[in-house]
Amino acid sequence: MPTLFERIIAGDLPATIVHRDDRVTAFRDIQPRAPTHILIVPNKPIPTANDIADSDEALIGHLFTVARDLAKREGIAEDGYRLIINCNQHGGQEVYHLHVHLLGGAPLGAMVAKHS
Ligand code: AMP
Image (cartoon, rainbow, N blue to C red; front, top):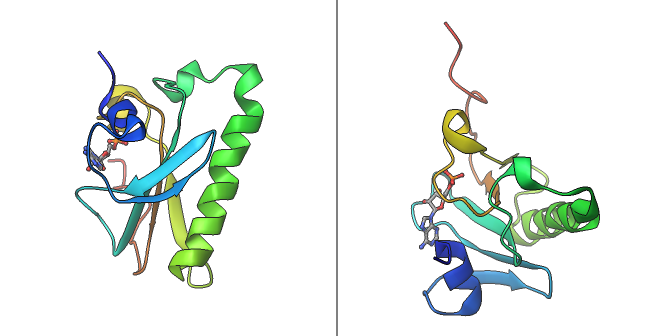
């Protein structure tokens, strides 16, 4: 079964695409948690951060340079933003296709809830 994000990348599921190249697609999160909330996704399906191969290093670097460029284009680079990758159950991952969340446009608060 293709992931939700594979379907978006293939054009089979609608999304607001903000960047697309031969390695990466970026689109707006359907349930934004900040004024800017973009998901930056490798076109090739890598399920989780655990599944990143040594040979994916350049691809992973590209996810971050695309994030940097999108932050600038969204006008949030100077004030600041947050990049998040969730992994597996404890990380709260919902879609098992690696993605970087780009969040900004307002103060984002604490990084995570305090551990008791
Ligand atoms: P994660 O918990 O890191 O796996 O995040 C998955 C994200 O995908 C969530 O923020 C969802 O709101 C987002 N999402 C789920 N379905 C869609 C969709 N069809 N289009 C855009 N974003 C989606």
